[in-house]
Image: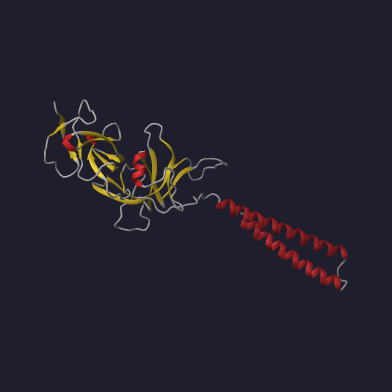
Length: 288
């Protein structure tokens, strides 16, 4: 309708302009009166205004038509829709929820002690600080074990009040394999995954069984004459049934792993295995 109105206005304007030119020629030869020339000028001005209004109406109609198609400012997937094609919506109406597919982010709860093992500050932001530790995600998908590779991009700014863990955020680039690489498996949203984060390398550490640790950061060292001494150590991290000690023990020292009811500095113990296995751990029992 707007295009037809503009075409009609263009035609009317062309006719009015030609009539004005013809009227001016007649007036120059005194073949037309001043009133007739004024009428021709008026009709040309009216036709010009109508044409301008028709052009504006067409531009508005084209703009309105373009606005009936909603586009997200990023490449994404629609999670849910609240309206359908042909419905009228007003400003502020929620029509859909969309999530980006250029990368995926996964929140991983990590203890404060493990944050140190990862070599991350408590408040890490990847921008300007280089890529964070590599992360390997794995999950059962399609009857097979799948893996995805990414890296840590930031840590969240608060401790979870329920788990007392700090969440680090790992990023996987192109989770839906938009580059059509057949060797990669898409990572669908909502999938539960296991994450393995590569920590920093530390030299000279000692790995002990979990029972060797006493009172959080102490161990019992079996010294000369099989006597116990209580030693403070620096625990780097605790993983499962193993404790990684960064400092406080020397190579060749023996550590008691037995659960003793009473421990006194300098008490003598009986070593269960006089020739200890490789490593610093040794089982012991008190000497009556």
